[in-house]
Image (cartoon, rainbow over all chains, first blue to last red):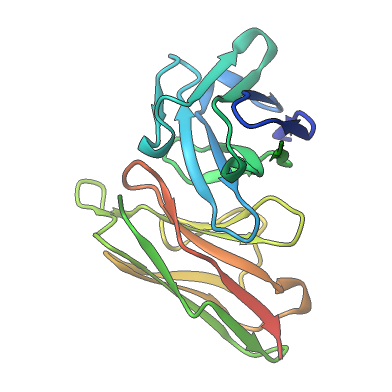
Length: 118
Length: 113
């Protein structure tokens, strides 16, 4: 079955960067895009960007442009999301999710809590 | 950006009764070339990731009980739970995938009356 397993919780200081991993299994990794979505406490889900794993193309939300980088290591079937210049408002649970070729998110990782605090 | 607005923000329904959640997009998410609405519904329980229920506005994801149904087109959509069960207590989100950035509604919390 399709599984997305994310790295563990992180605590970072303001101004630092965080890199969250998402290891995929149960399907051919290069076939589908991986998206990153975050959820701040009590807030709605917020899409950050996606990567077309097959060709490496990326698309980011303007809100995060310049601060977020999504990459993959196809040999390890793993996607990464790096967010830089962290501020307290970036405290959230970060999810990776896989689409089915169109954009609806059919499989989700378990989430990674990133806490930004001085 | 396409703004997604859900109503109500919360609702309480008796077990076995119908629950209806509405979602409106600020512009149409209907793609004429393939006649599809790029709209999905998700269920999220506390401490869990979202779970896809419906995509293409009305296609039920595999394994989702048939008491969940989606309808609508263009800018107005509805998620219906025909007979609410205790395990359906959750927050429900709509999402458009017509354009980037993908955007979600603010969520509707469903509780038991």
